[in-house]
Image 1 (tube, rainbow, N blue to C red):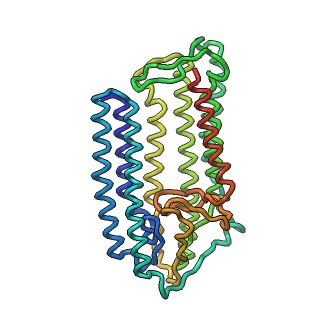
Image 2 (cartoon, rainbow, N blue to C red; image 1 turned 90 degrees about the vertical axis):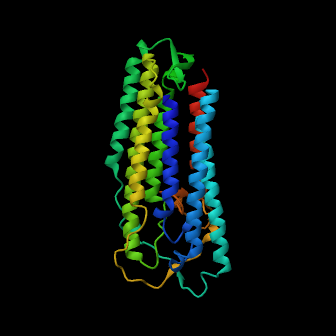
Image 3 (tube, rainbow, N blue to C red; image 1 turned 90 degrees about the horizontal axis):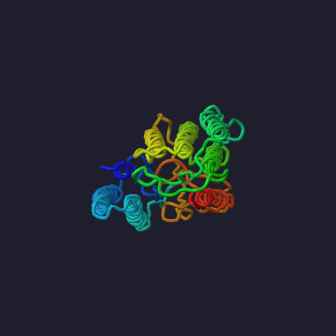
Amino acid sequence: MTVALALSCGLSALMLVLALVLPSITSPTVPFGVRVPAQRADDPTVARQIRLYRWRVGVSGIAAAGVGVVLYRVTGQTLLLPLSVLVLLGVWYGCFLLANHEIRAAKVAGSWYEGLRQGIAVDTELRTDPPRFPWLWLAPALIVTVATVVIGVISYPSMPEMLAVHYGANGVPNRLAAKSVATAFSLVFVQIGVTALLVGIAAAIFFRSRPDIDPAHPVSSARWHRQYMSLGAKALLGLVATIDVGMLGSSLLMWTGTVTSWAPLVVVLPILAAVVVAVVILAKNNRERDDGEEDTGLTHRDDDKYWRGGLFYINRQDHALLVPRRFGLGWTLNFGNPSAAILLASAVALISLLITLRFRG
């Protein structure tokens, strides 16, 4: 079994497991991205859609992964391996949208919000007494990035005149470029950009996000949100550090001219390990815990009109840049905020930089 096949199977397995467990770790009042009253969280329609979703994802996911492996064995084209992962992702969200549609229809037909007192809870102390940003967790990423720059500067005179700027799935270089500052430090430039972007997102979680506080239990909900916000920022900063380690390893391969069949693992393995750890930690803490707080009698307001398909949040009146995901882990962008376009443009610019500097050779 090749390294590429092993990595593809590992990533597909991770995605499949995450897709299957998400209904159990997502807030019960937003099943498949549909806002429902707490009294309807166990409605037969919701329970049935959870069963159907898991059956569809399980069968389709295994079939997609199997077809991808068979096609790879027959054709030998490594491009088919990431393609199978993308197909699995498409199947996942297709099953999600089916469940979202059915629950939304049942909610409207049954008038689930009729006669209920809807409310909004706000944690005003987020402005007067905000949680402290975990700056120390940024240190590993900064240290690795600075070390990469220093090693590159010291090694530049002794680097080969032709540098391997891309490796195939078998670890053999398949694209070369003449040594230059732009070529030798291409990954360093991307590394600095990725670090800045992800650190900015971690800061936005603290300073530009809006908590989705449960009006039925506002005190315990606000406390949980503060803890989850800190946990999410730490997980993201830890992921940044491992990305930097992977890019340092990839740069060292290029600078020394090393050829090894394990070259893809140098970049992918530390990042994949960090993703697994971050997903497990966030998944274990993704649902609010019942601290015994007395119920206020209020329920979340029905705000489905701001969520397109239960996935994309668009609200121009909401100044928050990030809001909690309705289905999944962490946060998502408020696409009604102009700053979201800037953030997306930054990501596109990083990808363009990678293509320009890394692959033009």
